[in-house]
Image (cartoon, rainbow, N blue to C red; front, side, top):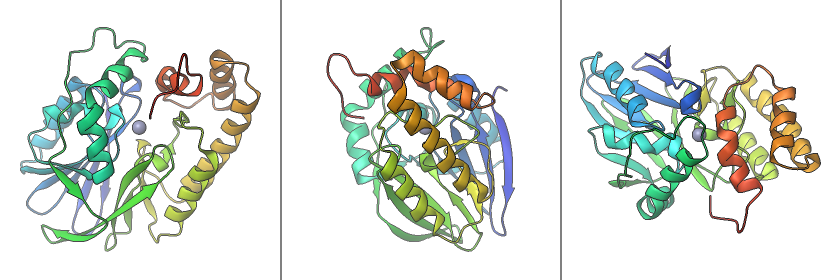
Length: 272
Ligand SMILES: [Zn+2]
């Protein structure tokens, strides 16, 4: 096994958070274990990592009934082809993946060291659109909460109002360099504030290990440093060096290649 699994126990559910190794950008897949079934959240960057998730899920002895995808970045949806369950995403995310999923995966691999020999994988369309609001699945209340304009245009958070837990996608990372490819620092801070205003105390981030509400302050601190570093850096390499010097213990620097593709476009910028 290459990733790590952290277990968060609630009253009616248990969430097994699989955190990818550096090769998978430390992205999380959350295996939400309900009384009779499993619901997965996000699908990993490579087929091999997704298969590792499936092996862990299968050991729980319950069927995987749904796969939710938070947003249209390859570290969250590429591995969906390996997961045998209907897929769900916000309508805007569904559109992006269905239209340009293959390109997104290809680009993610192209700019990530060590992916030159990654298995070929094609994007799988999203089956169902998710709307904001609540739904009870296998006796557990899910609250679908779209978050706009943070790390990408729109992404899905799932709150569990009876469990004090939120799955916070890529609005929040923990101990992992943020993906600042959109350099939308103000919007990201606003998204953090909106999520922070929700009542949840147990935070399952998009990358890195689960934690508590201190993740909010840590995130703001990172954004402040990243904003300044981006303003002052004389190019991609200088930016990487500044971020790594400021947060030497952080993972996720494998994302820097793709990040710099967006931050320092040549010849023309492309949609994130
Ligand atoms: Zn991500």
